[in-house]
Length: 387
Image: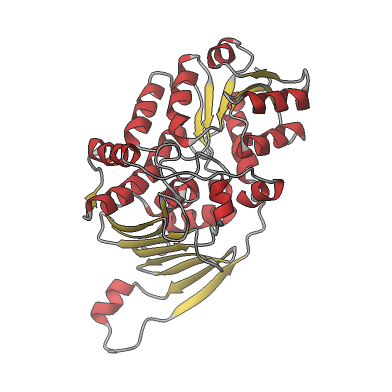
């Protein structure tokens, strides 16, 4: 195989972004040969734009049986991600899935189990923030052990501001039945993935979620969560779509210092001796250990979505290691589900948790929902701002 032919599933905002990369020839050795969406108005628009260059389908079976592509790029609402991934495996197709991996871990676990029978295929997640050189550098710093063991991590990510217009721009947005959640499932999958990618998985969670706190929606738009790790370290995650000006500050305190990521910069404070030893052995009652401040200038490109696409193609053609392997999509979602379950049960939630209990609570909210969704046609500006 000298090139990878893509079939894109979905014609929404993010699919249009990906199509732009291919249309500008920014993804080497790859092209889009087919597009599928159940919305005929969307497929008609795509068909008109690309004429005979791309085959356009509004029938799922015809799309998959066409054999016009080697890989699929899944760009549909969250609930459908596992369905199309599994169908892709069954048709011997490589799969690249937009975030999140799904709405609840049970369906994502089924997706991962299906992949176990098709390990010859390439399966990846569109976790484009893993291409960000800031977070790649911090992950290397933490994993190297240079700064010691993590003691605490705090991520305040409140620069996801959205107006009511954003939520009204799509009938599926911010509903239990069609999106499955709010800020945790739409905006934060990237941060939740990076959080566990850098700091590891917590063992238990206690979270407090505000449902429709700032907007006329039924899902969460405000979250404060506390987690605990196997080594006794703790973490805090705060997020919202209703604060301005927002903050994006990720602070990791370790035994030999502290690492802070904010304003697209890394500032590290490296202690001259281990904090745990200093606390026990110092004869000074108030004086903290000395440290040096190190600022890192990151001049590497941040390729984002394009970087994941290029890496996915290289993995197919040349066995390149994946930046975001598909089976890892369940990890950030596990934290997200645990936060929801903690709020719903008003209790601590251990990880792993009872997946059937989570699904029971989610289905209850879907069945008992009396929320009336208002929708307005999104303008071009609205769609641009949503990215």
